[in-house]
Length: 76
Image 1 (cartoon, rainbow, N blue to C red):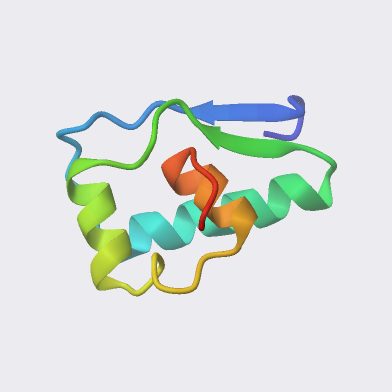
Image 2 (cartoon, rainbow, N blue to C red; image 1 turned 90 degrees about the vertical axis):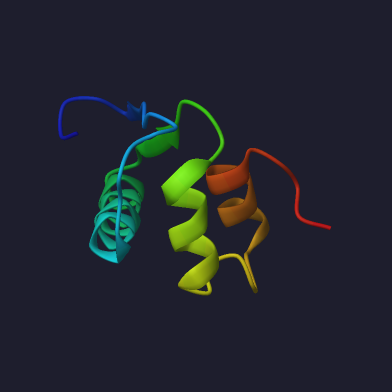
């Protein structure tokens, strides 16, 4: 991440993830933004990732940036 301004994460739909994985992605986004970079998802969150986001409350009060990052959509 230090040598690239953008990092794209390609998380498979059938990937098994947990809360620590989501926390790692959140930390990576913060680090990238501090270095004028970005972390992006190749596709909207789905499968286990979406379920973990939902169970963890990450989808409840999302900022527009978070909605764009996780779901690739504007939050209404």
